[in-house]
Image (tube, rainbow, N blue to C red; front, side, top):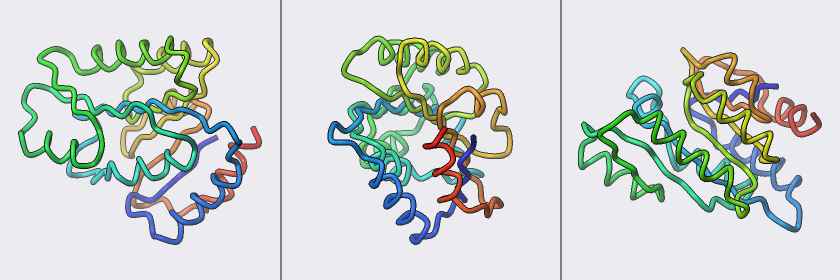
Length: 180
């Protein structure tokens, strides 16, 4: 159950995704907490667009928490760019994965959050997804190739792969995931 998106999603594909997800909206919109593994995902080779991630997730529900985790080497320019895209930068001097996992656990036990969305390729977060599901949270994982853990993709309710070379039809795969 993997939804594939090209890194450079065409406007028509974004519109298809938005239209499809909008048709699945319920009266009570889901409340989403999204956490981004900055050192793992915000790399030049992936060209990840945070506003695009926000746009896709906002069609699924209302984003209530949006954080990007960074190490102490993050530049002021990067921190500012993250803030400008509506995400809260969290700079840590320790292990970014540990801090992100702690924040994810807080969201899992937060009754006002329905969906946990993680933006990472790191299989270390598989346990977080499992715990979220045990606690009745829906899970979305967003990653990029190469190096997106298959175990991680298979551990989430919805997996979105951002890569330039994948040209599969997005709408059909989204339909399959929502049916499942």
